[in-house]
Image (cartoon, rainbow, N blue to C red):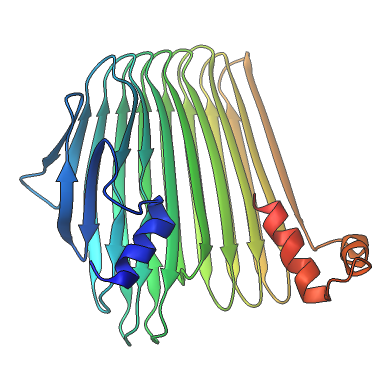
Length: 305
């Protein structure tokens, strides 16, 4: 890897040297390094691009890094990754994607990630998307995450896309068993003429299953965002979805929360709030010596933390 690619790798996955534990690093559609452990195996798919990640039952406090970098204009990378998390395992997975495009053609990455989470297992999944480059080509990312959760399992999903992605359609689907818990935190910022679509859909099929979906976003300039969140309560369960957005300049934000209760004991809540930065917030920071632009930046950074 060259210096630019190494810097991008550090930004999306906090990798500054060879990471500990299991990892698979992908650059321009090809593997750039792989390591397995006694408890985590990584196997290339035979029929299409992608990998199978197998975490043995009972694995505790291990990590897996699977970052992707696209640094070639005109390249669209498509991968299918399947995660098989054994019963009672407890792992952290870091999956970031960075695009560096200095050409006139579009560059993109589409990742189809499917999680099969065993009974009583715990997963923390971190995904960071970044685009950069001074070319005229667009940076495009379309991540799809499909989550199948067995009884008593837990998954926390933390995703962020703060800069440089011109177009994205982010799809997340979950199906939960008894007492399974899914927590999703999304942070998103768009600017220029960028478009970002988010589509969450969770089926609470299990008794006492729960989901908490929270999105915080900032839309600047002429960018467009669309947030759709669907929770289906098919058993005694609890679900909460929240979209909180700051709109600036001539941007446009659409929020569509949808709840369906198919059981008398399904407790479902949705919240959606879209608004501009409050004037008193700007004034307070400007009295401390900040310019209006600096004050806006401070407010936005705090909002997306």
